[in-house]
Image (cartoon, rainbow, N blue to C red; front, side, top):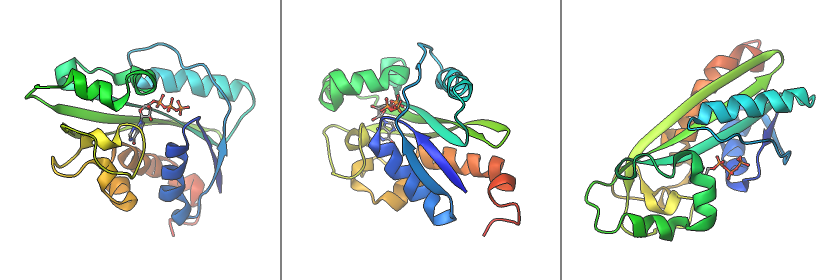
Length: 189
Ligand code: ITT
């Protein structure tokens, strides 16, 4: 079984490879741009993206729209996470959170998967806090400033652990439940 991961983000590709290849699902990376509509919902962005890619004749693919939703900032950067990461970055977020006591945040990952004639949309989440400074070298994006346990940032935990607990890891688990009959017609190995 082969799935195309359609994204411009190499960090996502690495994580999908890590999660799926051990299960016998081959992952290939495609950089096909699709329109990421302006919406306040990750699911809406994914739904429209999937429709566009399918209309272009692409099959057996995954797209992923993710975001960091910070409680004290009313969910910002949320669906604007990619733009905010490219502009003000982690440093800018830490400035916005300077001297803020309430530091709760949720990472969300919405996966859209079109496989055979089945379309699946699932969302995984992982709660945690925004730490005071950037820490760690693993991962990508907001990982150095987000901690699920209040101790280590996502950039300080090994990839295996991130896969087990993260928004993307949770979404992949939900996805595999939905598509297991297609991926493993004779039962999961
Ligand atoms: P696509 O081409 O797949 O859309 P993107 O980087 O634009 O790639 P998103 O629109 O999903 O991705 O934007 C989410 C932002 O959040 C982006 O800056 C990512 O680097 C960041 N992000 C997503 N998942 C993350 C994770 O697991 N850890 C840290 N940052 C993450």
